[in-house]
Image 1 (tube, one colour):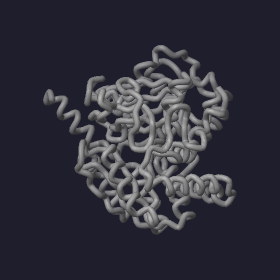
Image 2 (tube, helix red, strand yellow; image 1 turned 90 degrees about the vertical axis):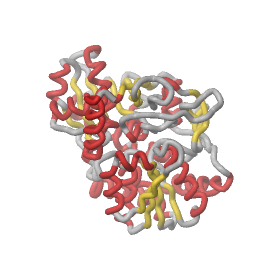
Image 3 (cartoon, helix red, strand yellow; image 1 turned 180 degrees about the vertical axis):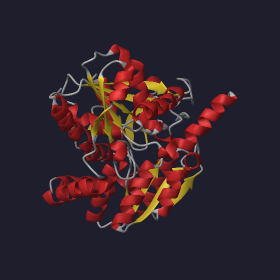
Image 4 (cartoon, helix red, strand yellow; image 1 turned 60 degrees about the horizontal axis):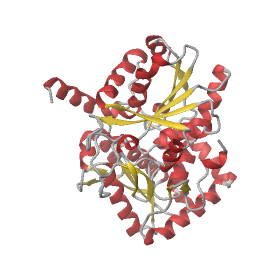
Length: 403
């Protein structure tokens, strides 16, 4: 595969996907953001400052940890965990937020807004806003606020205003819509830190670039530990930032298999899952053309996942292109399998993964017997599960009650 496919064109297209499908009022700020980002990434001072904060504040590089007991229990490949759960704030989201906050400062914007589902992106945005002395508002669906109450508390303690969204399904899609409305109104003073490889250009490219530190580190670490590249990479996929962050450094390595794992929810039926490649079709949602869960009239379907961070109707456009090119494959696991994976990783390794990350762990548990003993597998452990303990406890209570 040519490395050329790793870069969208000037209008943000990844093949037939991506683009800039936004109101005219946002075209100017998006073009300004694109131009500023292009200048920043060529600026040695910007790159040096970003590296400083990633190392000294976020805690990078994160370990590539050999999960010996998990590997032994599954009786198959050597399994490594890329420990993004050890980043400051507890997930990979902070990598992108640091980069975008530095961009906002370059553009002399003193207010940050964000959307969040699982709350980790909101916490990361609130964190960088506090660190840089900026005002912060985070939009969050009311349903997600209830199932991620711990992260709501963290955001508020960090000084952010958490704005509940009560429209529609009251989850991530609606939170993004509200954040975009805010940005249209306050674009002169406000920068929107979108949290995944979604939305209008330049966000899919920009978020991917800021998260690509994950894969660059994993590549070097695997070569040092094993003397070769891994056989496969596994990551959960909501919008897809943690997966793209891991995959990007390996796109040209055709012998490295890349697998994204979506939320199978309660089954691949309308409104019961968030597996876009299993039940979606080409469409446009919130600024980008990609695979979307929608009905025959183009109306966005309801989604479901036990994991708030995977509960979204669209997938990042670069993932859609990688799938078309057969460079990456995509699977899905159920709520039940994800919760089982949380418990298994706790027992095997003493690590409590986020429900999002547990989808990747669950896929490995299902597929392990098909792999060779000397295979090397890297799971991106994108976040820790402290935020999910009450959600898991409630899910297990309902299962016991037969609901």
